[in-house]
Length: 595
Image (cartoon, rainbow, N blue to C red; front, side, top):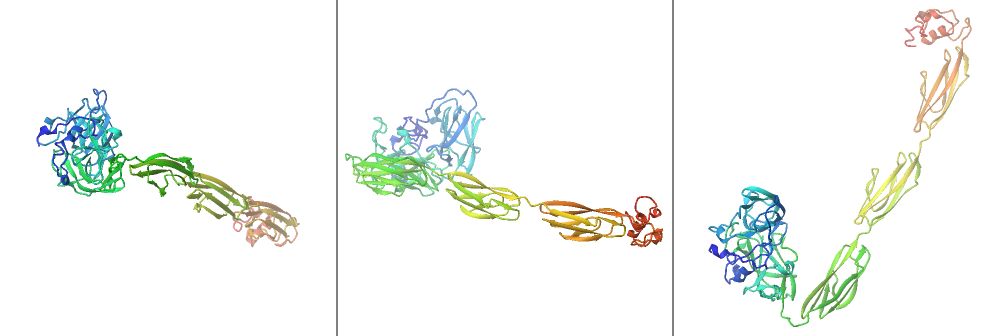
């Protein structure tokens, strides 16, 4: 190969990158993939490569980095890559033959370079809005940086996703890039007749024919071919490729590299393939080529009336899940009519009631001697919003009692109740015993959204304690006794002061205070506390009286006292003031400490 054979004409029929006769050498050996004809040099890409741009007016900006054939998100080592953006370069041009030196593809055009993860890439085309490169050999998978430099000064930076394989077919530009870039074994372009008007001959493929398909990103080869170098010959893919034409598997005779970054697949159109634009998909290493790629096949039925679908529609076109809609159709010149999504064969005309659970596109295919025809009808399905019924019975209880929550839902797949209950079944009951008035919230969630309802359990307040408390008699003479009597309700504990302490909820107690005393009872229960008072008035006895501790005057000193009560008696009843030496009201502090 010489550098002069790398000249590329710019007739606009193939998408980037351009494929030259030098990149895919001449020959007729289909098994080795080197039958790319001279014609291909005349159909190299220009549609993307000839976008004109002016001088740079602002800093460059990258909008996307995509696979160069499919424009998919992933790229792979050695594949062709397209960078879109603004102010990427000041000139618009392809590489020149003289820029390919000793088999090395150029890594700079007019000072513009691209590095991927720090590795220089071969650069094929520059313009203000687009740069086309061959990705360098990359050792790592996943995100990588893509940087554009001019005269070694960074202009813009972005990221791309590197996969082991990112296969994509090159596409013919007419008809909105619908048809795969392919040729017959004799070099004639493959496509519907008149695809390029009168400028280039195209014809459909025939069942059983060998056709050549072109793409990039199909993965490593054996032997390995380094990126950035002129390549001629054939290097077989290291991993198998599966090709589907329509819904039929095609035999792959050869799959490999035939030019720098250019993969070629030689396949046999399945003999059972019917006429029409058949979808084309290639799969390798778990990755597939782009959707919307077609190969035109003509099975020799030219001249026969092509099937026609007069109408295929749904009424209504929008339903709620669970409702039904009616498909209607009418076809002509067909001896077999099929509708997908489980319907199967149907008559040439008819209706069918369907109830899809989600938005569904139904495809009808009418097949006859003159080929096949497809049409589609889409039914939009909205999911019903959840409904929920929620109640508490009884809705009013006393403290310590229980209420039963009851609920039922529809169109929900998750139901939650708050206040510590959590996930529950779609329908059910739950016994609750709130300590206070509580509002429970239930939330039902499904494909159609969420719905909430509430149920309140009112808890009556706990009854306050009641207490009756009295002293009888309420007036006594010093030395006599009185009986304290009490009764309570709604209590857990009862206390009486002046040293009596805890007592039963109902009862009595005899007391003999030396002086007038007010007793306080405190009753405590779930509903709070209640107090009551009972006073015993003590009148002093006569000074000569005997009293309960003997006659007044019989004892006059602390040393003669046998108890604190006796000391208090002689101080308060007999008025022996000497017993309270410090006049603080507490007699004989050695036996009445602190009073």
